[in-house]
Amino acid sequence: ITSVALTQHYLDRIEKYDGDLNAYITVTPELAIEMAKKADEMLDKGEGSLLTGIPVAHKDIFCIDGVKTSCGSKMLHNFVAPYDATVVEKLKAVGMPILGKTNMDEFAMGSSSESSYYGPTKNPWRLNAVPGGSSGGSAAVIAAGLAPLATGTDTGGSIRQPASFCGITGIKPTYGAVSRYGMIAYASSFDQGGPMSRSAEDAAWLLDAMSGFDAKDSTSLEQEKPDYTTRLAESLKGLRVGVPKEYFGEGLDASVSDVTKAAIEVLRQQGADIVEVSLPNKDLAVPAYYVLAPAEASSNLSRFDGVRYGHRCENPKDLSDLYMRSRSEGFGAEVKRRIMVGAYALSEGYYDAYYLKAQKLRRMVRDDFIKAFEQCDVIVGPVAPTPAFNIGEKSDDPISMYLADLYTIPVNLAGLPAMSIPAGFSEGLPVGLHLIGTYHSEGKLLNVAHQFQ
Ligand code: GLN
Image (tube, rainbow, N blue to C red; front, side):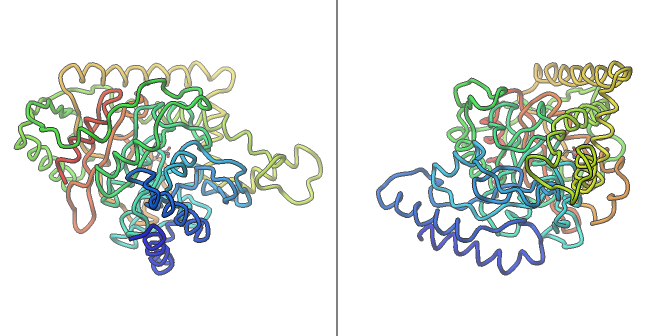
């Protein structure tokens, strides 16, 4: 099969099914076919890699030269990026045709993809359920076969939770492994791009192509690239699998608990040693994150002022009217809430009480993991406390939406790598298994994930 034929296959499916799912914000058929032709030429000459000619969808948070990049916001509804994000540049270089840009929560703030200016994405498994978020569009396009591979970003769970809700594979790499250059910033000390795919093997190849040191990102890791793709088949015999005793407490849906325990049993049967570990400060992670992430967001989003690019109000009276009306018209409710919380936490007189205290909690959560990894090689548990919830169910209740991030957020506070892999079902909806590793252990996580497939 040629890349042109493969790409056309996905474009046809998008045309047929995306009307129901709303998983793409922008589809780029001409760009896709043009890139597919080039990929076919590369393949004819025997050039390229395993991924050459395989189409990809990018979360609409990644800048693509000449393509609308909205970040799910009215603020950027008219923004056509003038350059490529490093991730995009790298995947272009291996010859992966771009199918389009996927739907997401506005500025990646959310867990359901409902806060998008472009309307909610539907979960392909049940159309009245959310696909998770913020990378809900990317998860939905993989699950529905509207792209074989996609990129996502994970600041507090946005790759893993939608992967879990849509029954696909997603990996949030170690902080710094994937360049943030050209990825619209939400909370820079947490934001991390990563692959979303059907299988662990696909994720390994995509991560291999996306990652690597980038001088354009000041927090990019200057490390030799870990071996993502060659360890997939290793035996799990003797692997120490940590199960945090705090993970199975109140609030965890019984069906999710059952799926998780069954998956742990599979690991045991494969020769892994299951050990109990403790993450005593896990409940501090959500409150710490929802101070720190909005604080960083309030600073990052100050660049959207209606002056240089993005939404601008009509007939501003003066400069402050321009700022005020452009921002109040351009941002949605959840983004405004985060900006206000963040600016408050950073303001004089409150900084010590909120921001500084949250930074201390962040360290405690990280230290818990370091200690747990003295006893085990990987930690397993649930990704989210429930399967996908219904559209509208939590959209008026931000606190309950935030609390549902309790398993994913601690990983981002610590900067660790983690995955969600398909593990089972609850009443027809997929349930993922969470694999958490120590720094730079993506190869090991992918190895464990591969044993489930
Ligand atoms: N749900 C979290 C939030 O709203 C995480 C989102 C993300 O990882 N981008 O901030």
